Length: 200
Image (tube, rainbow, N blue to C red; front, top):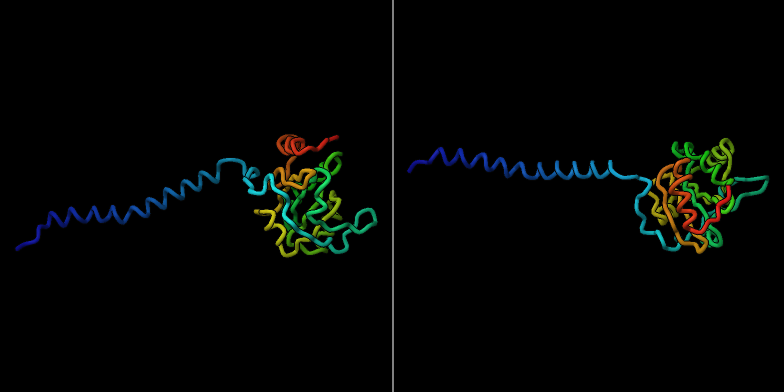
């Protein structure tokens, strides 16, 4: 009995196709992820916390941080009730935080909204130096040295800003540095929707 060389030759290409299937599937998934990441606005990443009360947290003040000659308070969840508040998560080592800082200074001058900060995984002396050089827009700053509060808030990376309504519920999340365009557009609209009575 002799082997048929033609049947062996026909089987070889079919086996090659079977081996190529996982590679083709991986390439298709990689292309899908690439195009999905490139599409859309990263500042509009969804958050499961929208519409829910802020996470329970208590953060001490940044050691030695003062404003107008008085020690600045820390931050906790109870203090975020009573008026519309923007919670900005920032760090001195964060380059985009430096870029957005003039916009935060502008936001702090607006009446009808309060601006507070969560200082993320930072050294107190560096945080003080950062605000001393660029200005301090915050009415309170909590030191999240371990990053635990930021995890509870669902922070992807600094900077991020949250709008909290007067009832203490998260109304909006902005990922990345705030820009003048955002402050004049979608962020402002979200502030108004949350109940802020904005005055320039």
